[in-house]
Length: 157
Image (tube, rainbow, N blue to C red; front, side, top):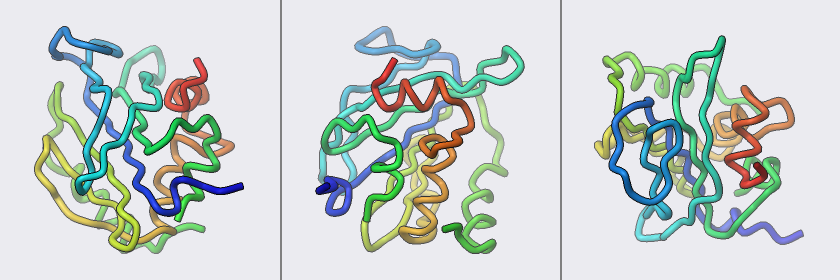
């Protein structure tokens, strides 16, 4: 099966809940735009949902892809676990204070890696395709962090 993600981009957007304009789609009080531009490629919102744990909403996760996709593995596999230094580099972005309303964009760019943005400011580029698969697998694999969020990100509910 041809996979549109091999030649394209995929993006995950994570937003701390609270504060959002009252336009278009809102999820858990967070504005979720219909499109996201990554390196001049316009991606479409595939789906969005709230990550909850112990009855507490942690963040809103949304998935942007070139073409609608309902198979999490297809998104994850597009373009094995990553090495510890990549994980450490990625986690360093989250050591800064996180406030309600902060937005984190995780944008995979083929040949470059996962670009990490906090409130539209690029904080770094991490890893390669293997790292992207491990990272996106958190939300989209066969054993996601939260099944209901995966379904919503894949436009299934």
